[in-house]
Image 1 (cartoon, rainbow, N blue to C red):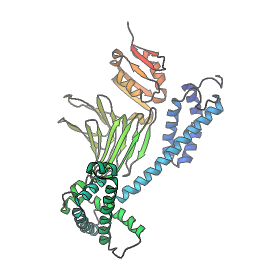
Image 2: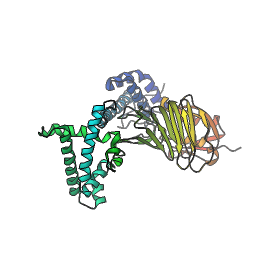
Image 3: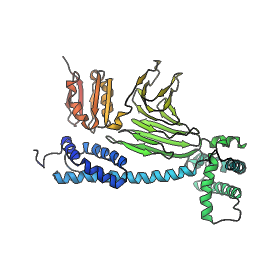
Image 4: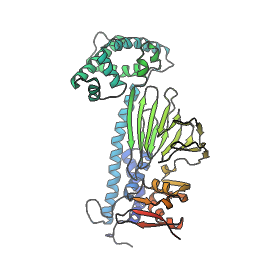
Length: 435
């Protein structure tokens, strides 16, 4: 049995984690109130431990008691971060609900909103040119006051004054629309204005209101956000429309919700989307030059240096690429690897019974170049992983448990003609074996 003061290797952390996993799950379920969320946080706790140093961060002796305290402190901090993020999400959900149009089945409400649109359109049309430009830039394009001031070559105070006056004009129009000319209490009027104005600007028939700029309003930014993860960490996010986003380690997604479309851009790594169906607002994912369009489905997208992988769990998605005439519809349990660059190769749909298996803590490779496999594993390793050109082209197949990635790397010489060496900085160098 190893000494309690021996260095805490990944194997020792794994043994400690496994022995306390039931207690961790119960603890995090109590913290979050959700067993599903607790399962995600337990996994994140392990990923943090897998990268933990041999000596505890506070420099204390690495006793069993100190390591256990570190384990539960890590879980606690992850839970607190998660709860703070949940609070932000709830506020976003409330804002999104205020920005939704009235039900299309309510004919009376639709008629009322069309009348209000005429009124508000006239107010905006009558605004001075500079004030109108500032309003459009702020509400439509999401520009800051400083950006607008620079663009219009005016002072920051001038922009703020223009926007306040424009909002006051719109509020007055809404008060007339609501029949509140008697001057209700100021706070209540502001609350009505926020909800009513958001709904007004969300009506799908805006473009028919007679003012050309209404078409621009349909592209206005209603909500934006992003989700990023570090090495060895997966993260999840509930989106304002009821969709869900989960990203792999070392991944980054930017999100923009507009009146007529929901947009996500995969900037790095891999993501899995569970999309709430909304026929009036398609959900579109952009990954480099590849565009994936859906209404409601569950699918994963992974961005590699030379390709984009799309995997569908259920529903349908349409995949197309800028500069290419090819496009294809993928269905559940299908995948497609789209090459980047100027490739003219025909796209080949493959069967995919387990899309985005990284969500289950596993990676799968089928005759994939070892260089791509090493790049993928690098998202979970705090070590620097390097591979030479000869070894990078070797095909490799198999399944890797993420928590055992380093053990798998060490066993590579048994799977392929390579050697694995530890460098002075602690990194691993994979080279093709000679002879």
